[in-house]
Length: 174
Image 1 (cartoon, rainbow, N blue to C red):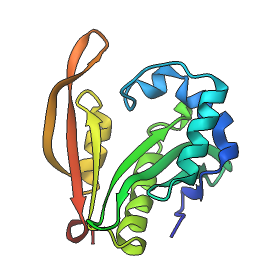
Image 2: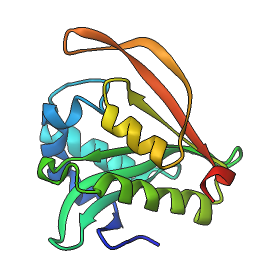
Image 3: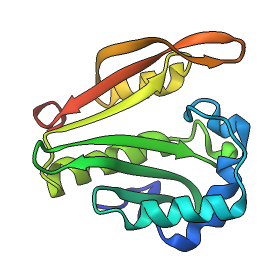
Image 4: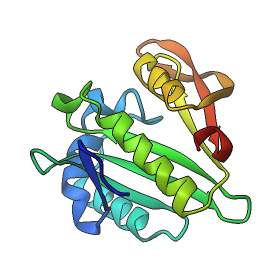
């Protein structure tokens, strides 16, 4: 369940803060996924990862490339609402040399398996920036449906961009 032919997912550990710190401070990595492009100290990243790793309403996993055994990203379900059976999905592929190699689709597939087959969720949703065409195409391919957008909610690269809301329901996945 937590692996396929390309990747493995392993639970985020508090000790993962150093690799996550490198990704979080790489503006090329974060410009297409993070609302706030701030540089973070190592201590701030350590606190953030420690909190995420210990939250009861989140499941965070490091993405391990199986062939190289290298950490290449993170995928998570956050804001898990067990009563209403929903969660938000977030993903970052921090290793830029691993972009366009199927890592993202593999990780989304595995996290949806976890969400629907193990956690018994009904709905998984996400937010994606309108200029991130590659991610939008991936999410559509995985079955996510456009729900709407927050118009001109993000100022990036000297222009206003929409934040697109997408979701997938249990019966659309299975």
